[in-house]
Image (cartoon, rainbow, N blue to C red; front, side):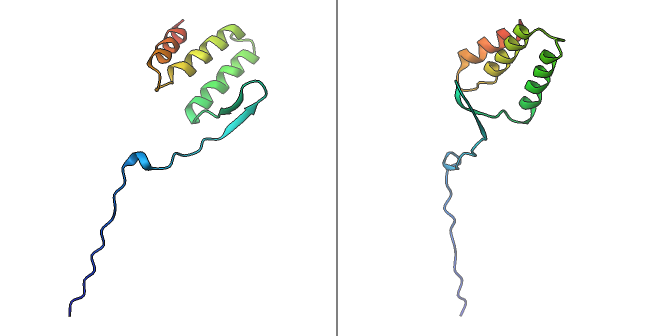
Length: 89
């Protein structure tokens, strides 16, 4: 007797995958803020170092940093466009 058991795998849509939890930093005024991913973390670190060494003035560092943050927003198109404009300034 040939006893073959077939198993079927239930496919789940990709949207049902659990989201990975990103590390957060709890800031006093802002509350929990997610830590940026690799490339972005390097960008913000270098930008902060340039400001700390006074190679770039702090208002410029803040404008570029906020512009970069807003331009990386993929959910809100208007915020992304405002960020790109601020980053170009």
